[in-house]
Image: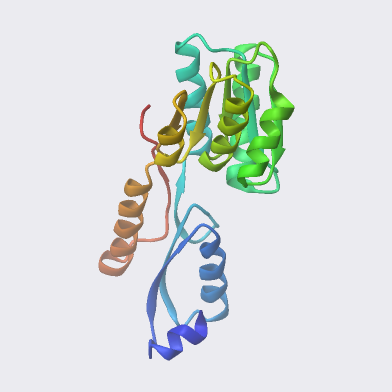
Length: 212
């Protein structure tokens, strides 16, 4: 990244780093502080830097509450290993906390972010009484919906997170919550402009998810 900025002839620049790109942006800022004038991180926070993050806890809770309103209480959770702070730890913990608060017995399994992981985790969690499956991402949800389709269990509602249109296009009994990616981009741009034009200090912002 530093070589790239040098090739462009940049002496000072403002940087926006998204998700894993945020780690690269942080490293650039720490290694070359004279180069990075302003920095905003998306989907990743770090003390001392401006950031715009998604509401992982609120998103999972919103889906679970929506399912509860539809009378679906036997809900399994397909997640990502908790070494992943956002998609893994925070979303899984939101499910566990919600189940505890509602007096429900949690049923969850964790894997990676791939389609095959969703397929495998759905097979692991499926029981005769399962009414719905909440997945930490739309990719997991597509894998889970594929498995359920093959088992003839299309009565089970599958929810993803991320608003990928392929999920609801391919499978009927599915839904996906929009994290508010568009709003997050706008918030990040505003933060960057506020720093450049008004000299505002770094701040952490949570982008609200869209209602189902």
